[in-house]
Length: 352
Ligand code: GLU
Image: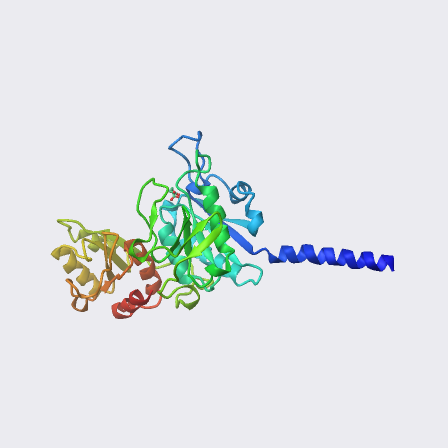
């Protein structure tokens, strides 16, 4: 009888421990490099090397992570995000979808340089096939800096990836306590810790030491409902160039982009997606040759709508709507995998 009681107690204790373990959400951290993994020689050194520190070191630097999630890490790349490219995007997208398809994974946290974080996050926003949280973070100060911002950003990022309330809100970016939608977030300052903004669209929420307050769910199509899919054998994406408009802009860079194999061109237009008459004439000419032109704006605010000052119907071009040039480039790359019909591509820009 006594032996029986001890056996029951032991079984209960084992059950307790394993259910406590099972209750902790499983979050995978995918590391790509950036300042968050950067190292300098001194804590006050403004110069440093991006991506010098591996994912295990990042995880070990924040022991509190194990209180909020069952965390594991994978190194996808070790680059400054100025070197982010289609190859790493495809690798990342395939791994994210593979991991999220597993019932054992509750969410994904991705560490990334801040320079192109607005693009990678939007790419994943369009090709992730799950409602589970995917959250990117970075930092403005290297891991060795005085007042490094990386550790708390990673902590909050993992907390959001583990938060069931983050589900269905698309890919998110956590920086400096703010939760942004990948659709809206842009980098607005070269060195400021609070470098990211979502402009008029506003924050999706905020996080304070891992506790979230949610404000909204992004309205545009994304993640599980997106029509864009990265096939297992997808090895490249169509080339799309961005050309910055300015006073006295010549048409030559548009010509050069088309000659060098661009399938699409995004104009970072002045004002409401404008450019000089010679540039506009050339954009229409290359459109007739099948190179899709998208008009966006260099103002970093507002919507570039169709047929306002520039006649897109006549020009065979597309208006970028809310997307700034770097995000318009991402959507155009994915749209071009499906069609080069400017009207159909406009429909994507209206909905995504
Ligand atoms: N150029 C680096 C990068 O984007 C540094 C910027 C950062 O991570 O804050 O990876």
